[in-house]
Length: 184
Length: 290
Image (cartoon, rainbow over all chains, first blue to last red; front, side):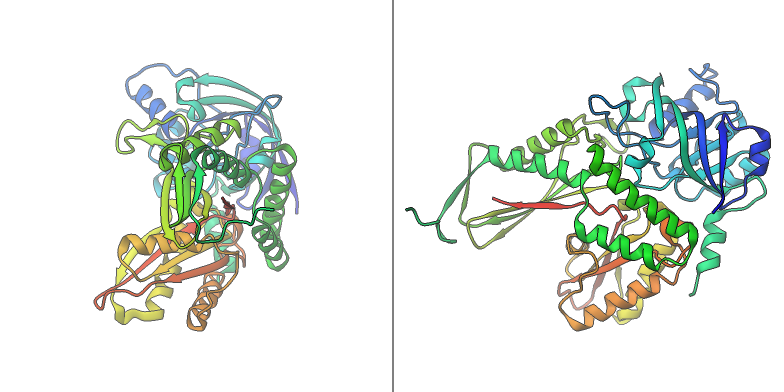
């Protein structure tokens, strides 16, 4: 199986090259955010308050890591279910978000907006938090530290493994993968 | 030489022993998966037809090894702390309050094990983290004897969110149950982190049905109910779920579930409650007897 290496922030050229079902290794920087931080981000944008980071061109990884043991930089850090972020995602895409990493299906509204924004959605293996954390080389707080595991962090990752779910051509691995193997 | 106490002699169990046991069980459960779960994943990796599905199960097994090597939780969602107690009727708990001792154990285990604290107060509004992963959800059964069996099950949110309960017309029988489970797995697909273990409760009253479904998750993965009719239904559900094509992590494939475990209780003449407690591949549970 061919594996594509992708640098983050992701380039337009790389976005165009990705097809659903591709395995990728990501290297570079990404932000973390999940339910509570998405709510805060949306509230800030709605109120016209500047965000502590610019989502333009960024990648957001939906994760809430376990606390780091002494001597480690991060604990386990696998993906959480993306659909809970669907309500907040179109607004972030409007502000330039280019790539999301999580697990599970996105809503029709998110997929439609992703096509318009030329953004991609990738999945990491759910539950593989220990393995995925080994790709994280640096972590620094960016916003909402009071949210603990739900705060926004910037991660520097090296060869972070993921699979392309939604590409910019309308492909959806959850649909095509299941259709190819369905026997009932 | 003293003789060991007989099973009926009254025994005292100290709260501090319970706290210590609960703390170490949660840490152990979150880092080391039971051998039957690992064996079942290895079998799934061999039988999976899709190359991406095979690669995904390989990553899952690799993850389990990394978790053990670095003492990291297998999954970052270290769950709601569910505790099953089988309390012998000849046990006298001393030195405190049983529920408080368990919650103290959860607090200690989640702090010392660097496990994530995922519980929030006022789930409908403020959603403020309780800070120590308490309160535990405790299910107590009084049984004969003078021992205390403690079984912990850290339950992740992704799979629990896909659990469902219904009360169906008794006329629907096997077919109704099968259709309900298939529709549910098809609907939740990738969200519950397949390959799944399906805990299924049939009968009792509604609250009991879901408890049966959750307790079914404590069985050895892929073991069957001793009742031949129920065993056949388990096999049929598993086979049909694996025809759905969802596959490991929903990327498409032949292994959507590792096992279907059914537990049954008699029900009212008007009812057939059915519950599915969804379990991701990361099926964590550990037990100890005091």
